[in-house]
Image (tube, rainbow, N blue to C red):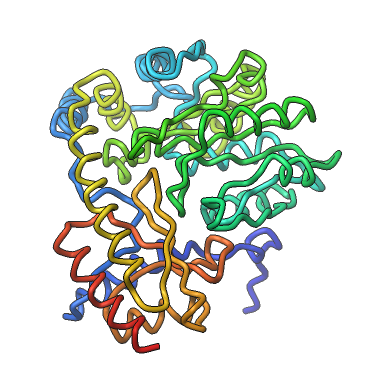
Length: 389
């Protein structure tokens, strides 16, 4: 039988990060000595007090439907987090809890965009952004950035890209895949341009707590009340609390947008998992000591990987200031990213993600969210592989 799929489904590209991670696990299960640098999740376990809260909720029978936008306790905890950490005032009705940060991003596109609308996305970008825009019927407008500028879009580039069809500008700082962090001044300037042109900002802040050196996280919404009125913050607990599998994300938005997303979510996924939400309340309200400890470890790995990469033949790398990624330039090898990563996996047994997945074919993404032993061994193999090309 000829199964006809929708144009919507046919336009999508599968997630290459998930595919690389799955391939590495498959080869490892088959006995191959594979070192994976592709995963976008911390190698640390979820802190025990968070697991205990979810376990208690499960044992107490908290297993039924909740409000589609999340339980009141969690929405209130998120609102307090924004007030405490970002000097932002949100009513809990402006908070929508979702099934992960990715789900929040998807909800934004579905609630805001129509056919013919445009969404500005700086490249390198998180690989799901353009696909979500296309699913919403809109057009992704990709703006290339360069490593000489730490992969940051300039105000001039943003201004030039805006048209009367532009609905959203996507801002991701700290960035996946580059680890770049915009300064507070840079954030404000980009926000000003969006305000002046009536463009909404989707600010993906999921790596907020993972910044290094003298980098300072700045939410564009906290620049002024007007900036906040033009901003939808998407966030989650996956990275800073190692809760990737829990699927708890959230967003904060102007009330009309939050109301629309609440309705949309009520007809798609319903509520996020009940007992996972109880764990999320404890994540936000409980001890935060692990964040500093994890940050110190990530920083140590980052410094080690950055130094090693820039000593390799045919590879250069800009240092990151956030998240847990580096984005090395492989153009001197003469290979594009897919072929490079395929050969790296088959010949050196190291899994990395091709930069083409993020819109930049002369780069690869490596994650240092792995043990120092694994990281060091992978870098040795990568160096030997690159020197032979």
